[in-house]
Length: 54
Image 1 (tube, one colour):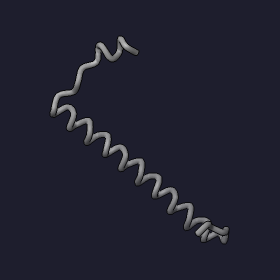
Image 2 (cartoon, rainbow, N blue to C red; image 1 turned 90 degrees about the horizontal axis):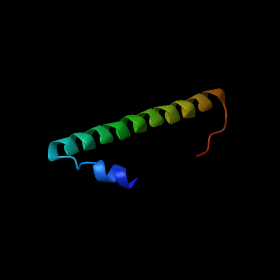
Image 3 (spheres, helix red, strand yellow; image 1 turned 90 degrees about the vertical axis):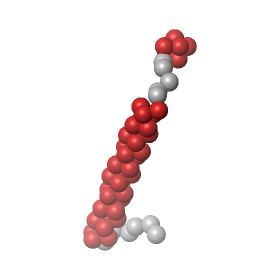
């Protein structure tokens, strides 16, 4: 672990900004997918008459 930290370089300003953008975009995409699945399951369970927690 110490060797990895020793060899690692700090990202420059532009690289850091790009890393933040990609990370936030990834969080947003995963969140939207999770929201779509949860909403779809909710309406499917309602349609099938299965009780859903409120």
